[in-house]
Length: 476
Image (tube, rainbow, N blue to C red):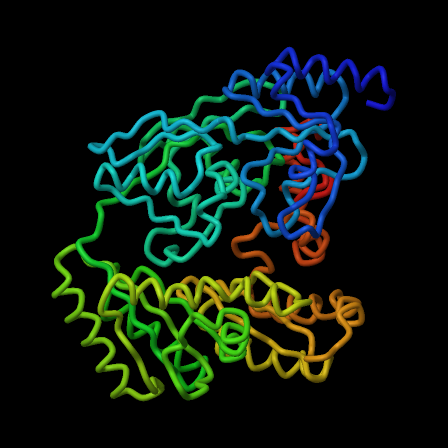
């Protein structure tokens, strides 16, 4: 698409697909769709289209293909890697899935729910709760992120340790292909050995292979009790030891094991003074443990307190509290959930969403902290995250009083240092945020030629015209 006439024809075709009121072309109307929520990436879409059915999505894809444009699928636009933001070419159509917002079916006998891609995560959680079921994915953005985006990025969150990430929670999909056909794979089966696993191929593909329009997801029984403990530890090695003790003592009841480094604490105190840190001493590491129990609250409390008594006796654990009420539990979780925003309010910082073998974490953190201090004297490393599944948000903050622009210029060198050490220990440079634009080129550096060739072959097979989110995640 290169001329005004072709653009006009495309807009007319899109209006025929979904109705004129659901095709946005005025810059002011498209502004919220043209940049990511961090305001790091900005683009200029040819149009924003809001289809209301899978059939309308398919018609939109065929129209875009016919008129030589490309597509950027977008859900709640809460991503952290720029994977849902159009480029500045004016040749991309943003396909917003927010009108695909129906809960189609709940099957409590099969423990499944069928939802459309535009359903907000919190709405799905509530729908499950009304049927005395649990949908366990929990994210800080759950009030605005959508299921389609969760699927496209293979979202993780706080309960991966027990329930797995979005790929693990998905049984079937409905997808509009890059050719504008609809694949209905909404089977609610736990076993199905009838061919290649297309479901798992589309989950985590960041909209580069097709547009997910609906999904069949797993539900679980609501636990009888959920208890939260907050522990102060003498170091990261002690946190790894505590995790091993918790796995042995709590088994599948161990739902979350979140870790917070000491440099996060003053940021919380500064930017969220209403939150109370439960310890007076500046311990190196804090750990938040959540236990879900299907017996009773009394059984849960006895089990958790037994773990903590043994952990104190074994050493490494310096202090701890167990929430006595739902309000106290929420207050402890608020500390964990507020760290990311506190870091943003502090100013320029460089995010790293990494995963490591749990056995490698205790060696990785001090080695990387020392290397960063040598590279940028005075740098602050405030890491936190889902240690239970090996996922750390290893964020690097500018030295206090440092020029933000000068620190930003060091970002390539900082990324290289951190990611080299991650890959050296058999880790990943993107654990749950996706590659998007942010990590695409770095990923090419770390993947083997053979793996990249296989990924490009998949992309070529399923999107031969390269119209689905081109330039995101992988280059052709």
